[in-house]
Length: 129
Image (tube, rainbow, N blue to C red; front, side, top):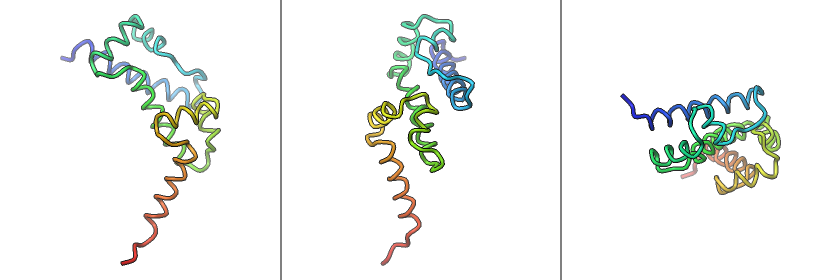
């Protein structure tokens, strides 16, 4: 039997996944805030935040942002999507997306994409001995 805190945490992770899928598939056009997740879990936002922090040691935003970052990276690997398109897909203004991405990844989305291309090229180039 899992604890109530673990149940809240697992339900939160499921809600994040469902909400982000809705965003990507166009069924939702606004990113939820923590209070929206708390409302879905039928708990007070302050209690929600405290439970997640107490249970995991991290703020609830950490998990939300990590999942967003994973999705952003996925789409940035596809050259068919411009950085601006990835930003809009995730409901960001392109300049704010670039700032957000850099804050979490340490490079801009364009730099991240360039690193991927370079890594791919290095894997395809035989090493001379």
